[in-house]
Image 1 (cartoon, rainbow over the protein chains, first blue to last red):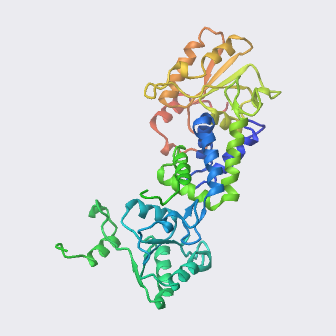
Image 2 (image 1 turned 180 degrees about the vertical axis):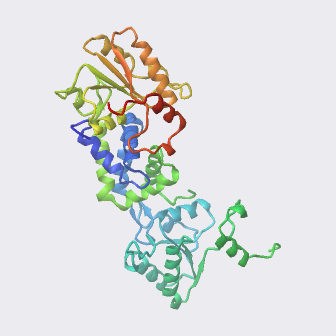
Image 3 (image 1 turned 90 degrees about the horizontal axis):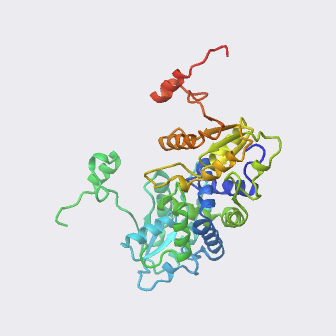
Amino acid sequence: MTQRSAGPEILRLIELMARLPGLGPRSARRAALFLLKRKDQVLLPLADALREAGEKIERCQTCGNFDTVQPCAVCQAAGRDDTILCVVEDVPDLWALERGGAFRGRYHVLGGVLSAIDGIGPDDLNIAPLLSRVAAGGIREVILALNATVDGQTTAHYVADLLDSAGVEVTRLAHGVPVGGELDHLDDGTLAAALRSRRDVKR
Amino acid sequence: MTQRSAGPEILRLIELMARLPGLGPRSARRAALFLLKRKDQVLLPLADALREAGEKIERCQTCGNFDTVQPCAVCQAAGRDDTILCVVEDVPDLWALERGGAFRGRYHVLGGVLSAIDGIGPDDLNIAPLLSRVAAGGIREVILALNATVDGQTTAHYVADLLDSAGVEVTRLAHGVPVGGELDHLDDGTLAAALRSRRDVKR
């Protein structure tokens, strides 16, 4: 902006908003304007929520989840199966599994996946603490619930190799037709995987 | 989220992020996670920027722009032509025109356009102050730089009618081929408008 059509406070706000994933420079301007028009309803509550989150929320030192308590609420929760550990790529995956409510064991968040392109190696991930948790005993099965992407599957194989000698069962999520999915819209790989893993209808 | 896989602080942050234009529930979760991973680089600076913006920035009582000074920097700037008033829909349009640097008059921000669907009538817009500014004298031309949408053009006609008896010239932006635009990618309306407004190549 030439001259000074917007003050440095607005420019700074737009610049920070534009760093968020999913927002480019134009949508950051739009979001900043949206906020300025709704100071009391959104802008100031958001400022407070950010400050509170920044001050209170930290990584769980056990599993890598984000929470205000240490260890996190999921690690602390009673009545979960301590013998099954579900390894996920990142916190939203943990949230997704918890929303589903189908898993009642414990979690371990890797914080990413191996990626040659992005220069992410094993030391950048939460892998060593996973090995320590397994080595400490009491875990019977490790479910590698990583994304079915190339990087996700590479990471799954890498972690599975490391766990090979740990004496635990290592499993992965099933591939197949999503519930509610139409065959015509599925890619060939998913269809082939669903065919290979076909099951008796009576089971 | 069943049980408590994410604390109320995270849920509140996500809920507020999801209100931003351009962010749905999923991208709001992703953005919140992005922020939690970059506390010192983005999250806390953003909290501060929001608070500062919320406390310092307000609408210019003259033109409707957002700024920390009253009247805003554009209204205060010396060396601008006080006799030409450019009417825009909202602040980003003002910023866009200022980035271009082709306009050196003053602005008036309507704060929206008339919309039957959204229930936005003349009283919801910054129209009465526009009429007062024009009635106060000293303005020779009003440029209606509204978006070339149905609502934008409806609003332009409405404002033009109101200004009919004010004794000022009322103009609108030219329609035509965008600079760098390819004819093959233009809609019929733009092509027709560009044809109608064709000019002598030597002018």
